Image: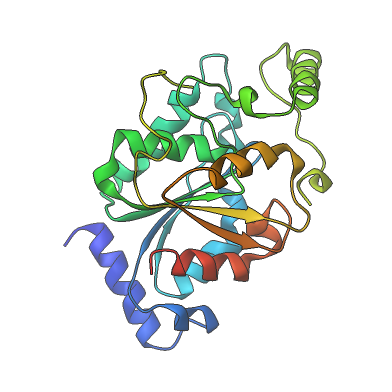
Length: 243
């Protein structure tokens, strides 16, 4: 039996034994989640959600992207959006995952779009959690307000010679070939907007999603870092997203 099958069997057994807690009643079929953090974060930020998902019998992976979190020592000018995509693709391949619910928070939405193009057969559903949306042929800065772009370029140059952006205070959160296909590669997908307070920098991305066909829309009445501020609500949304 493969490792992923052993883990799934153990998770279901724990649920049957009554260790799942309140979230366990939402769904009894084990799912596989890969949760991708955004800028200035790491896999650690999902801890409150992973605890709840695993208690409900689900398998969860929270990779940290190159140059961030506990992998900050790998930060370099060689990192591109392809690097972040490969981080996620490598986890899915190495862990032999399939039928994945792939979640990208904020800047992490770019990596899950890349993974959707690279391995659509492994992905069951995409969840863009208050995410930055970038179409083929554009860069992340193309979808941000000009004043925010200018401020971020200035901060990056002043603090690291243009290599990285300094992390904003917690209160701030209350590019590919033009021939690429649509964002998400036509896989089932959901955009979950954090609405209280709404993160102004992502308003353009939210409007873009609402103008598209084929997207589900969800809202959580919390700030941008839903996994920290509203883990119970986010867990319920993730468990139910494929139903």
